[in-house]
Length: 236
Ligand code: FES
Image (spheres, rainbow, N blue to C red):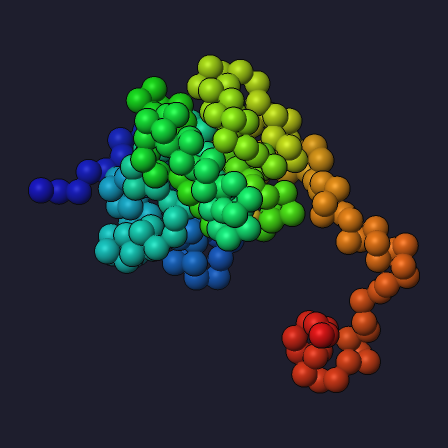
């Protein structure tokens, strides 16, 4: 049985974007990760058609492309919701309530990990540390932050998303984009909104404020012993 492929119309459109992406790299195969985001932006996940397309563009085998798709969890092999909800269950968020939030959302939505609701609106996944531990427990929707969540606030959030209500992330742009739109940005086609909205919250800025008040500054790498300088100036 032959591998399914995109229609001529979709393929022609994707090839224009793929050409632009590939031109950014000295070696064609280095463009694989953004190309996978590109096909994910088309279908909402990386299908067999998407894998075939990427392999054809880059002169790779479908086995090589599949190996990459299945390694990185940001690529989905089955349809996600229009809003993909990631609940951080890494250590700090987990003990601060992330495990309870994840469990509450699965029960509330009637889905398992990485599954979408029947209406296709919301999918939920447990994810690793989002580097936002100072706002634990955090939830992300299409990679935008919702800080200091509880099981109740997270359930309200997914209900609002399913009802099509306006939902505003704690930080970042005031309007959520869809999963497909977010995938297109990750493919390297910015939507111009990266600097919209609050970029940092008070907990992240507290260290900076304390350092300024107390006159603390980072050590000058030129004055560090060679070993510390190699480690980026970290001192005990
Ligand atoms: S542990 Fe959840 S953001 Fe770091």
